Image (cartoon, rainbow, N blue to C red; front, side, top):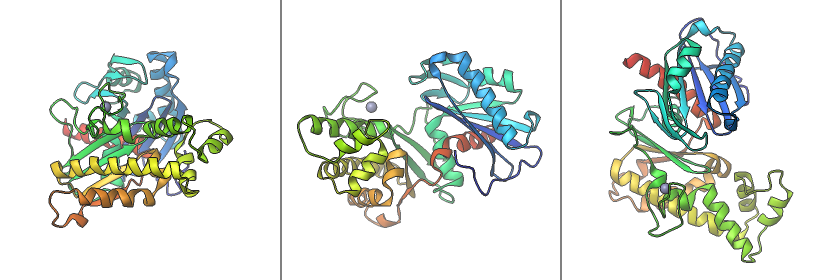
Length: 336
Ligand SMILES: [Zn+2]
């Protein structure tokens, strides 16, 4: 993770620590009383080593981030975790996390025993949304929706200045709004979800199918020349730069689907702002967002002031999860 040049000072007490627990890596940020990041650390998750090893590694990464901040564990007011999958903010349980292989893990309780501070656990997309709302693109708005387009598509909602979790904590799943009846099967098991037609995974599937059918495209050479040998967001960006007709066709379709998803959201919630983030959006930038925004606005039911509903890129990047987890923990601590 790049060091922040404007890195804040730990300034004694009142630190909040945020953990972004991902399937491949654990990112930790230490946030001071001025909401500045004053320490960071990162380790590989190694979920295959099992729950206990991962929890030990979270604790080690937290200690490393505190060292980076020149701070002690005793200065930590609270710890927040953004975990992938189904979590319960009230109990601190991770009910189900497919990419960790976890089921019903009392993560907050287990970390509290090891760290000696109150721990709160929320969904990773919720905390990323909260970070964009409080410190990123959404500063100053009251109603906001965020959509993160990467391997999957995650969504989060801010309503009346607060994270909206819904009755069962299951709100905001914009990636699983159906946009193509009987469309491709989604990771969730249903068919035609937005995630199944507009995520990086969907782009990869559609491009590969066209290549297998014999379509000519620079993508073939770009993948062969790449280290990871697969269609990354970076390769998508390169193919578009070279005006590859196959990639332009696939991305054009993705933009249309994302616009449908956004219009659906706006017609239900009428937010002031839609924040678009995630690997695909970050790699493709403003040139990708503009046609999505234009197509979405054309589908707003209420046309009045449609241009005032801002559709903008996320600004915190990779950091949103860890920073948001710290901010979430601070809010939960104050509320209880
Ligand atoms: Zn789905």
